[in-house]
Amino acid sequence: MAILDILHYPDSRLHTVAKPVAQVDDRIRQLVKDMAQTMYDAPGIGLAATQVNVHERVIVIDLSEEQNKLLVLINPEIVWQSEAAQTYEEGCLSVPGVFETVKRAAEIRVRALDEQGQTQEIEADGLLAVCIQHEMDHLNGKVFVEKLSMLKQSRIKNKLQKQKREAATTA
Ligand code: NI
Image (cartoon, rainbow, N blue to C red; front, side):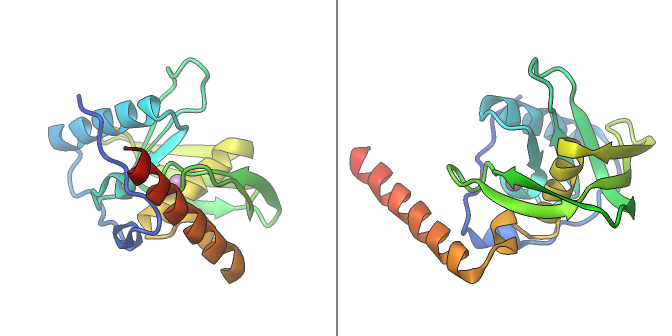
């Protein structure tokens, strides 16, 4: 297992649209293990392969305190979503220290493969629904801050660049 490097906004590689996984094989299972370890280490509750610069449609999520309920979604598709929306204050491992309110569908039904290549269908609401939609956006090359106003986006970019400069001077 390995901890992978996470790309940080505004890295243009985060805008890559990920390709479907052709075959769920040992290579993909290894990727899933490494992504889970990277997410737990961060720590975070969700990670898309895009964020570790692998442009294939793989997501890991774990909302449990104990980090023992890993959900693996390969080639996920939203097959239904509610008209009702919910707002949630989101964060992202690729946008450290930034938390902003985002509006998304309140309930979704998702079809995806698991790490054995079996089709699973999941109904989600609340935080799980938020998280799945957030990670699926990553696979489509979208970062959550891009749902905010241009003014907020440029403030966030400035904040992250400042953090980077400060980290460089301290190191
Ligand atoms: Ni994210």
